[in-house]
Length: 457
Image (cartoon, rainbow, N blue to C red):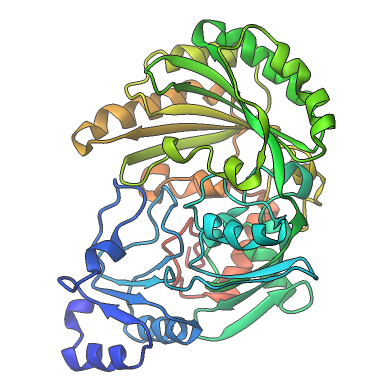
């Protein structure tokens, strides 16, 4: 539709904005459309680099009036690449970087373009934090709207569990506040329902006193992976809520396949040392770098493993238990990994995440103990078929152990995953409730470049 817009219409739209309007060929256009996942290469007809809420409202109204496909970019980190579209209008929030911290109330309000690294930079000045993504370049917006797994989730729940309110521009171009007291139905929906209901321009979070964490990893040789994962299974069954522990089958920087147990203990170092003593004394690890470190150092631990500009293809599922058979298949499949930067990650979910009422938020499956993420990462697009095949084959091999549920932030493109997979991110009852909210706030499905809950079906 954008090729039918008169130049006068586009110029009038441009003058209505405080931020920039970019078209193909303009300076900055290619940088603005480029996402973290290099596999995504799309060219919007128009990119609005929003300077504030007014620009978001203007962009939504323009898209609705002219029947344009809409993509919304926060951090641009999501593997599915829904932050950019071909031909339509990209609403780019990345210039909106304000973070306001109230150290007395222990709250922070962040605009929609803020990344977790930027958020932590502001809050850590006051020795405060909230559950945020484990890769600092991840956007606050996308992670929170889908749930938000992080190192503090055992103590404080998901990112969305720490959300106090949002400002959101809905499909009719109205700015609403959603909180426990204002538009509570919408507030329920944005805590796990993704970007289905509008463009969230700011997020208000509860903060907690966190300045350091007992964290790091122990690494074992791959030949001991079976015993290490069996230990991990038993260890996490009784882990206290202060501890978040993740297992990973990966390749070390010197090219050696290994099994790593990565931990973050949010509590007194003395108590943490006692909790971690069995993990650190198990077997004969080749690396043990667990120590007390600043929280931001823990947050940057995975930087080198998830660089921008690589080809990324992921598949994921919750699993109910790590049976010996499941462990054997994981190890067997990792033996065929085609890239030293690809990995298998097993996240233990528990603590405060599982203590939030199942009906309190749209986020579902809080009682699922483990999440399996198969991460394909490689540098060259010419090798895409090989690496995607390995991820898919591995995911297929693990289906007998799948809980039939998925974390919505780990879903890939709908064209690849299938529309029915989105329903696996929610219980039947929650999906129906989200569908009714979608019909109320976005009946024409203007915001459909997301893990879409389609009101038109």
